[in-house]
Image (cartoon, rainbow, N blue to C red; front, side):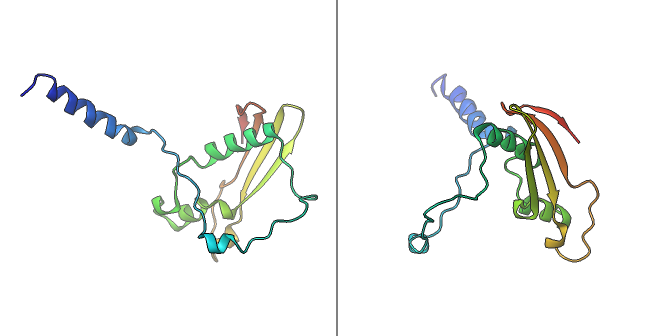
Length: 139
């Protein structure tokens, strides 16, 4: 056996195991089948829609990644409350621009969407974030 072969095997085992040590793998969004996408007709104008500036998007992404870390899925949660809170579609979000470089992001879960009887205290969060995506404060 060559002297470098065991070292190569150890290196290969470590490299493939890096995903188990917290490195996040980007997952691409799901696309519908082409025949379903062909039915979509784009609007002539998006006037009246919500307009988010670049710094606002940076602030929103920072808050989203802190509130619910990337890779967290409803399937990974054990309790029904956790499964509900892990779904973005049940989280109402408000973004407010206080100044040129300070944004407030509020996440308020709509537990009525989870089913009857769901009560979770302190499930929401409010962030103060600068336009570079740095979290200034959280409550």
